[in-house]
Length: 135
Ligand code: HEM
Image (cartoon, rainbow, N blue to C red; front, side):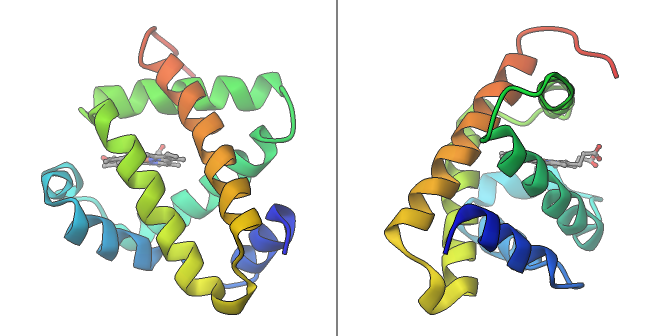
């Protein structure tokens, strides 16, 4: 299964697959719990699903509008007080969630494709930590 096919599968579900990610992340990374106080996780799961469309598109090329969006998103994460150090743990939990959900369709190749797509998006978000990026 390719990255594109994996994303299409995720998008074919009305209930966001990544809802399970937040349960896993908040259990495995207790220091993140306070960051999500008052955040509606169902709504958040839908936002992250849409975020994965951006992650996948950003892995394919340099689109100025996507780059700008990720800079703004990074800037906002900094404003929300999200420590940079939590990004690798966020990625790892997300990969574990996708692995569980895809089951037999998961592979080393797909894991690598998602990991490098997420890493590239995170790198751009973290550039957003360095400056002021209004919408
Ligand atoms: C690949 C990395 C990430 C992506 C693509 C991503 C994506 C998103 C998106 C799309 C939103 C909604 C933005 C909005 O409401 O305008 C969001 C919000 C949020 N993210 Fe992330 N995120 C990432 C990493 C992280 C990490 C590492 C943390 C914390 C450990 C985190 C915590 C949050 C919180 C707490 C909010 C909600 C803030 C609020 O509504 O008050 N995110 N994220």
